[in-house]
Amino acid sequence: MPMSLPSPCSPLSEFLPSPSLSNHAVFLNNTRKLSCHKFSGLKLVFIPAASLPTTKSYPPETTVLQSPILGKKEQRLYPKEGEELKGLPMKEEEQESLDFDEKDSKFQVSDLLNAVKALPCKERVDHIVRVLDKEIGVLSISDFNDVLMALVTANESDLVLKLYSGLTCYSLEPNSWTFTIMVRCHCKKKDPSEAKRVLDQMMLKGFNPNVATLTTLINSFCKIGQLQNAFQVFEVMDRIGCKPNIQTYNCLLKGMCYVGRIEEAFELMEDIKKTVEPDIYTYTAMMDGFCKVGRSDEAMELLNEAMEMGLAPNVVTFNTLFDGYAKEGRPLKGFGVLKLMKQKKCMPDYISYSTLLHGLLLWGKVLAGLRIFKEMEGNGLEADDKLMNSLVRGLCRKSMKEIDLVEVAYQMFEKMKKRGFVIEHSTYALAIQALCVANKVDDAFINLLQMVRLGYIPRLIAINNVIRALCLGGKVDEAFYVLVLMYENSKIPSRMSYDLVIHELNRQERTLSACNVYGAALVRGVVPHKKPRR
DNA sequence: GCCATCACCC
Image (cartoon, rainbow, N blue to C red; front, side):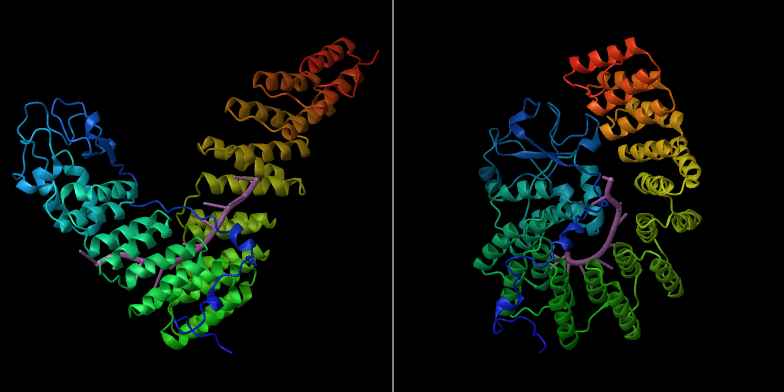
């Protein structure tokens, strides 16, 4: 029986998350990173007026905006001593509410706000930065909203909260739009519960939220797996007669997939088809759901269905499939996806290539990976440090089974260093391990020294690998040097480390040295199994 | 006015 869309008449429990989540694996792959916002370079900080280095006095609760990126000392919000303040004269009641110590202070943002209002949303913050060294003063709630909105857009949630909490200081009453902004702000901070409280407050004041606001909140709950709360908001929507749109449904669909309730999500999708027109987001979300649980073929079927419906898959749609096949252990399927993608005139992007490449490397398809890497570079997409590290690690891992590859791996590793890529600890570790396996003892030794010089403390297993390789090659002095290097970096070698060195010293009949090493071990609280030969 | 999608993990 098809599941109907939740409404106040249908039992909510059908849509609520099961008490124990059936698919924990889903969560493992959902550590998402915050994307860099256009304005992330902007850092606006509040400085308590009380701490401002000025002879003018400000009310203790007053804070001013200051941007560290302005840098210059001259760019500030408060006037220089003796400087004439610009801006409109303050209204009587504002002066009253601000409770200035000096009533003749004029703290204005009117100029800023007027200029900001004239700008499109996205450019507002830049402008704020530019004119922030002018004084600030608040006119109306809608001006206030404009500043709040600009700051939310600029990912300055904390700043928004501070501004909002000072609202009453300026004798301003929040209006519908203020509440909407605050809901968004809390959602952006991944705190939908707080957003819900704002929503309740908003409705208590007689304002009705619209579909965009409610969808934001639903999405926020879904993103942290709180489907029950998401559906509660969905219910509110129905109650106030606000019609959900395709975005709303897509959020719920995604939420269901996120908590592993794939079948229900699929049923929901079928119902969406009956209610509203699904879009490519709907399909992509469902495909992602299938992919995340290892059902990429079904995702591919959905892609075909979407295309038959005349929906144009985008780069995200395809990238979802790359990831699905990669996780499933069928990374070569990615080549077919890549081909289809190009057929559909969809340009693969950085994520396409890196996902495919990671998948190939993960499953040992290193040569195929190299091919993709070259195609990627050929398309003008430069691999970043992380991807390069990953590629080299993949090559190293593979080269431990296919010794011939060790040269390719090591060349790439050295090329990375030359090009100035950051080499991660784990990359050094794997390179060293691969070099040991390939019996390139000197290179392994050199790289161990190099990584220590870079401030990495190698793990015992890496240390012992190198010590073992050195000892096997008779290079016991170098092996001993590794021990010393460890002391110097406050890392106590293991019993195994000492055993290897003592054993080789014994073999070379360097009894005195063996005794010294044995003694050194005891001093550090390690009792080697191997004893110096008498 | 404001709302929805994808990757790297060593």
